[in-house]
Image 1 (tube, rainbow, N blue to C red):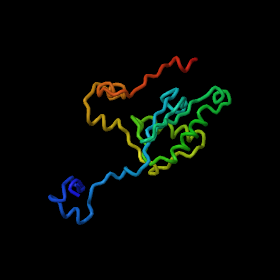
Image 2: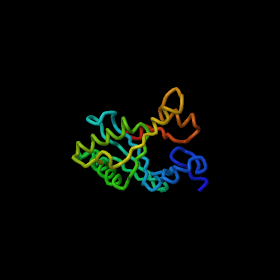
Image 3: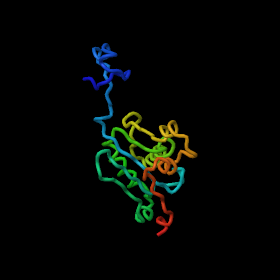
Image 4: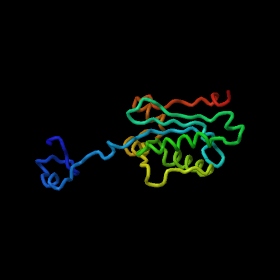
Length: 169
């Protein structure tokens, strides 16, 4: 009990009334299914670009789920419909999605592509979205707020460079 804190971050000794009223701080997300999402696209705008690939990793799970657009998808004119559908199916099991700059790119792009293919995108409020970009922007004074710069600054292996030649093979 001595390690528990009230919502004001105080102990039972300094804030006994909070403990009597049940105002104990807890991490509400502990029992939620959290997943980390990233997408790569052919353009920055969804009306002229497609999702080329995506990956999704659940917290506390080593497996990385992913899908990639195929030549058959392109030849049949379905482009990213299949991979968007596969991602949306996985998102049904997610309570909290974590992205980097996903508020302004990944989520609107995915929503637009899902709408184009008449696929059901998660309704507002069904999935929480945590965008790490805003936390980084607030906490660090780096020259840029890109994932590459921030991970380099923090000494984290976090950004895999995309080789454009891969898409032309």
